[in-house]
Length: 225
Length: 368
Image 1 (spheres, chains in turn red, green):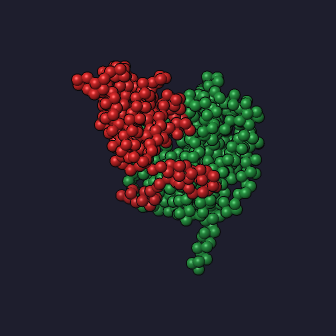
Image 2 (tube, chains in turn orange, purple):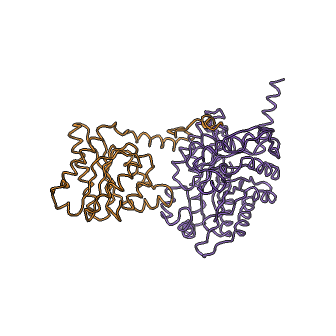
Image 3 (cartoon, chains in turn yellow, orange):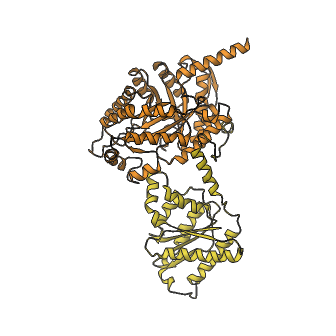
């Protein structure tokens, strides 16, 4: 089982990355308790390292090798944790740009946990007003609890009105784990696809794994007046 | 195998001098490039079609007709002719006329066009791009093969008793290539008709085009036109050469860095690693181009993009000299090696006429 976090934090170390790690770890614990046997593989995609590749993908129209690998990891994940700092009342531009170069239907049905960080708790609804609609558009299945960590949350506990960061991380992770467990595993034979591509690369005129296509008679028939 | 050049026809500032050619200079430069292509022994010149600045070639058959009158041997083609927004009746007429004027030295490449506003400017809807390509070509195909056409479709006024004139030269329509950057539907269309398939192969990593061409080859065989290896494949390529590869890189870099399509993005080196662009010595271009056959199979037509991004005409003509003198003769020799006998050459008017005559003879003998 594969869990992947996308972290759009920019500083080093980054509280966005820290939140991503804690969410991943909490989700992994839930899954390993629930499932027992199947090991959970976790991976973090740091968008800071891919910032230039993302910009180049916009300019050239295709993602380079490093960015392709990150996109493949995200689309092949059984569950996704998406964490951004809040910039100018919304997700960061880099965060949005990364999801702009992912194919629009690649995340359909994928369980996603959304989270954000910021200097003040006043930005927390950016999760509900910006981040959740983005993933709704991509037809992902977003966990009900979104986790916002303001600077003060890293040093504070619960108060009379809200759970502390730890409890919220636990609740959100439980929800993501439940969504991930409740759905069939992402096909693990991406390696098979690659082997097919390679074979097509090598073999002259070979017919390997190819695109699906609507037979031409059907395309014509659909147009008859 | 055929070798040639294709031009986008962009009017772009030369980033090393700050000078932008006029439209008139660019149109004339395209003609000069086509004449040079014949002079240095290339087989094909293809022009793009655009309906917005900074591009000049809005009227390809006008340009190709002029070039036809000034050349003897060169095959005149397009890259691409917009099958979505041009009236298929006008395409049938224009290219048949060109075919007569050029004594058959004509084929064309159909494409959908990727400039959003061109669709509404010509009264169409970009969301109907694929259906337009399917229906318009079905009509074009019929207009060239049936003398009197009754036709009704979704996108165009119906035709009753219409004859497209002039009829194709010797009753043989120009060969058609279908160009596509992303759509498997177009590979399927090319396969269905037994037409050629051209992969632009310039801006994207080759894996993408390997998938499209594999699909085309498989479906070409499915529709009974031959084996997958006999399907008619064309590829684009993009090169810049100097005797020493360091000189090529140094001279081309400002053009690359400021190129309208991919400039201000990845480095020249990264782009060369990810796409088929080759900047270096003639030998490097030969080596890289020969790898295309390993990836895509034996193919029929190789077109190079040589005249974009503001490169001055003088430089482009020097590039064509190198291409014609040092690169293409070697490529012809090397590609001919180990090429299975059953892999056909690109169809020409002569080969298509001979095939039609042979088919007619067979038909007569079986009916008698």
